[in-house]
Image 1 (cartoon, rainbow, N blue to C red):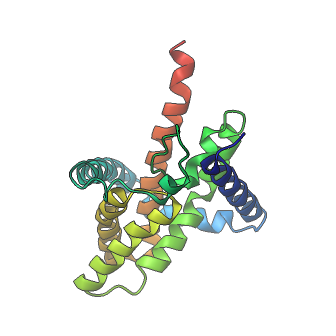
Image 2 (cartoon, rainbow, N blue to C red; image 1 turned 30 degrees about the vertical axis):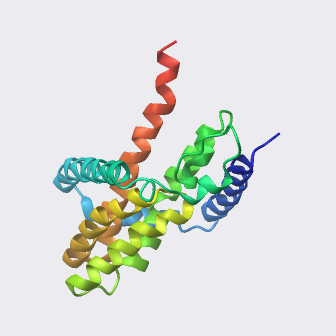
Length: 205
């Protein structure tokens, strides 16, 4: 029998899978990937190491907040679904499909193809129109905490303010297309790490 958490995870996976599949039929894929052209040539070589450092700082700060701020900072609403004998950790429900063995690979492909669209949507919502430092800070905190809706712990949500501020800085230099490109690189690095995590057990047998 499925637990409440498993039901929510499967239901959310089904919803976003249908949404991502519909997007592939919309004909918008090529246009959304075009934002990556703003990182032609050597700019890619600069974006990747900077993004790796950004990701390392974000994760480290998030884990630090969760460690010193218990039980608030490590709280996720997913824990409300926990049943006796079950331990539910905060996580991003957007990647819940990757935990279904027979569905993980096709879901990963769908997710990879949808990253530019999802990044562009967030950049338009949280970066577009930003002009002042208070606006940048407020929108970046909002950007981070909005991830708590999909199950991310509060500490990690606050830590996501860091990449939010960086994307704002990039936005001020080159607009939504450039900040979207950096956001896409950031998310692709995360997905690459997830892919390595998925494949590594096959080589450890």
